[in-house]
Length: 122
Image (cartoon, rainbow, N blue to C red; front, side, top):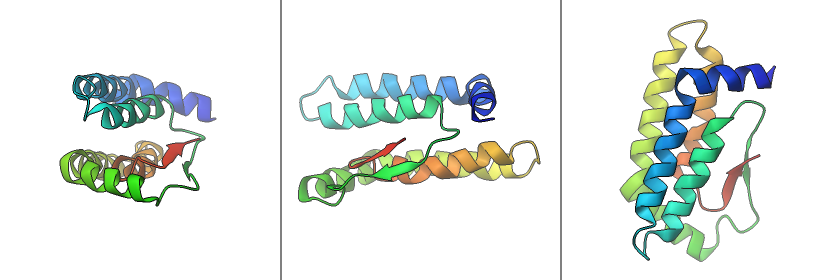
């Protein structure tokens, strides 16, 4: 069932969102300071291609000093906007019965969009 959900997800906006993350990641990687943030953006883009059947997993060093600093910088500059887009999309999709499974995937992606360092979608 998750394969079918991922196919519909890609058709109805997941592919465009994933490409947007990846393009943004490559743009961030044009500067040396932006490389770790670009890598996280590309990671978000790849995970956005197939979110059905996966869950957000926190690594053992998710709350290490460097990850914490990077997550704070990420939230201030990028994360809150991405999380707000996922939240808005989820709210709009929850209005329809057909959109509820897709809204759940947007809710799943919010923690990853807010704190990507030390987390991944598996």
